Length: 212
Image 1 (spheres, helix red, strand yellow):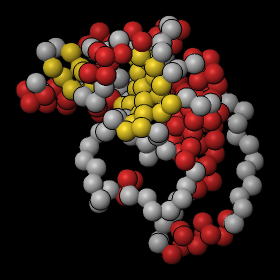
Image 2: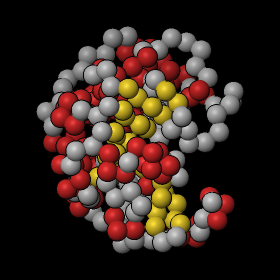
Image 3: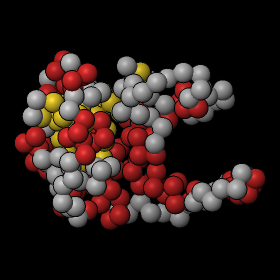
Image 4: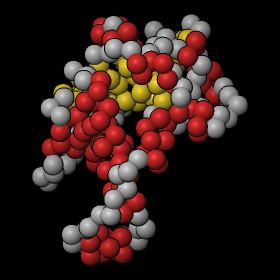
């Protein structure tokens, strides 16, 4: 019963862990065999009956089998919950990929075509988006995810939302390898949400194929 969650437990503060330590959270789970992969973040966790459950995917874990899913968690609240307190213990940290993105050889020189258009957009709308940094970050993550998917060979890749940069890299990498991609609905979807009201053609590899 999701109406009986103890939301006060969401505010529990853990001692900050350094980035390197977070990177190896659940590291042994990386070497287990799984059929499915989920990319999400720890803000989706809710505390119930002494354990943290994933509010979007817990039922999915039950259907697919908790041992069959590898959950890759972004520690957006700076630290992960103790694995002993999770209902889904087959989890690793997204920080591992972030660490590898700092060390990987994919920081190549990028040539931008029609870069003046991007500069004009920044100027027209008073923005200061560092698009060069974002593109390099996307390419680094995408390259790592392609390698990861080639090794793990998941049948399905799930994301908790499709429109952040890292999950875009996840989806693009998976679709490049013809792996089915699924977004889990994480909130209200209506005609006011810009991410779900796109009226121009974009590369479909940036979009999940299914929405649950």
